[in-house]
Length: 435
Image: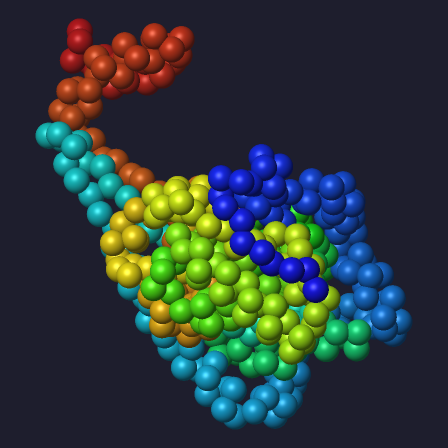
């Protein structure tokens, strides 16, 4: 196995720090052109492109096989254990409750000055597209995390896409979760083919207004390429987590939390930043001890080797500075008083406070969303929320007196910018009174 050994933050070379900070995002540019060809092909040829791709595995499929039927969903309920269905319903309840709290007033307005009323309204988008990862693992939880906020926001139609297996079958738990969440239509199309189909529409799939949901670097590249044709949530790539801990951290728990983040994907990243040398050494020893019993060692080996590390900070100030620069998708704070530490955090997708808040609770059932920005994008993006599915147009109403009060200001500024017709549109309303 790739041995994890503690390093000090001060000893990191500029090259090593750059790799840690950029993690999987640094690889996306190398695949852009290949993904662009797929996206453009789907734009011009629709379903044919996905059919050609999946016929490599099952040569008798037709266009109708791309959409999940009600019969498939009913069959999925029989294949999924009842206690799993109950867990999905419990998680859906918490996720719905949390996102209901995000709903803002439908309309508000203020009197900016006498005769000038300005405000804002809230309106949901018409059609949302949800990308649900598959392939190496199934993620029914992502259906709940993407579809439920859209439902709460009031989106009229919600379309999901997910990669099928080689028999063109979608994961049963994913289908059950989609039904519980209230997804309107589900298509068995994954990767850049699924993203492009949502962005441009096909013979059977409607064009959506916005695409949300996480995926690997190929999905992320496709989302970035279609941005502008549709909205996207954020460049959500492979999972990543940073654990910020002091000497009070439990090394057994931290080691398991660290490893849990590296089992998602070969490009996943886990980072421990601690002020305690003893804790750092203990965590590394436990990771080494646990490694032999881990499943899917190829995934662990890759993610441990490429983007994961254990770092020792000279003090908490340096640890927090590094944490803010890293801008983790998931940030665990395991310090003596995590709420005091929280006050100093500026950049993170979702924050988990204390020893009893490991990342998996947010992944599944605490109510917060697990679709989060990665690759330092937490510096400019937030996690998925109701806000991702709504628009906020502004409005204004001016009385004649209100416009008269602003007349000289607007006219002068318009003329300064060389836009005389802007000025005339104001002046025209006062021609009679100026005579």
